[in-house]
Amino acid sequence: MPVVWAPATDAHRVDTGVWCGVTIENDELPERAHVLLEACRGAGAPIEPARDHGLDALEAVHAPAFLAVLRTAHERWVADGHLADPGAPYAVAYWFPAVAGPHGGDPARPAATIRAELGRFAMDTMTPVGPGTWEGAKAASDAAATAADLVLGGAPAAYAVCRPPGHHAGPGFFGGSCYLNNAAVAAARLRRRGVDRVAIVDIDAHHGNGTQACWWDDPAVLYASLHVDPGAGWFPHTVGYADEVDASRTNCNLPLAPGTADEGWLGALEQLVAVVERFGPDAVVVSLGVDAAAEDPNSPLAVTQDGFAAAGRLLGQLDRPIVLVQEGGYVLGTLAGHTLAVLHGVEGAAGADGAG
Image 1 (cartoon, rainbow, N blue to C red):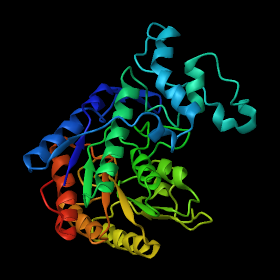
Image 2 (image 1 turned 30 degrees about the vertical axis):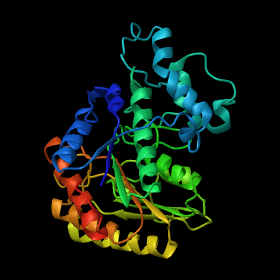
Image 3 (image 1 turned 135 degrees about the horizontal axis):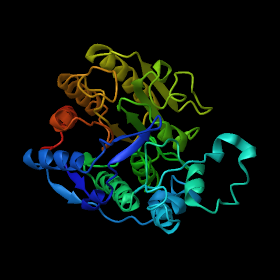
């Protein structure tokens, strides 16, 4: 299986975030991608460079106004003097007019300062914008689009080492450590290049609210996710419930109780696979998060490496061209093992050649 890598993802490094008013260390760091890259290289996978897809690939899923603000946010943060006052190294919103609806003002009338304008698009304070965030996030999306191109060119499967992750980023918003939606970019690339129907299967521990928003009520793209129940207090809190069904019936959420382990998690995935089969896609995109692992503190799920391997086999049995895009997974000691378990499972079930 070819593995796509974009060295420029290293440009995004944000060491801290603000959670409940407290500054804490960030665990979404460049080291994640390097652990994955070296594991894939050690497994014998061919490493393919990501190609620049310009802004077109991003504008297929994101609003131009959002992209313009995200692209310039840190530069404006510096220009507004915020490195000195309040002395913060990263751009973080403090004013969120979007929650006020029409009382937040006309979106066509931007705020004069980035500390306020960023709040039109920010979903939380845990996803600051650093000096290299735009470059790194765009490189991750380029990796996803390149993996889609490899599948379009005949590869049965391709894996993109994407970080920062992307499934919480929507058409006009970002958060949850996600800035641009890599999986949605891959799906849009497939659609624009002639694939009639695409299924996005999200196995990350958290609901991909951004991906759901990107493809809501699109009859050509199915979004199917299993994730920890947001009603139990987990991100993204107000989105990801089972009753969120669009008019085209191409959205399927399976929330899971905290503590769900291999048996329950794989049972839910079997249900998703059945939904995908009924939809009949011509290609599949997988949001491959492994933060459902028992040892990962970012979720209360309890999946083992055997569970991830079984998940890969279930996904491979879909027997469609498949693009796998990295999402979560934050324990560096087990991240590669869990991810490779999924990739090997996909290859073993699909009969794809090579390693990875």
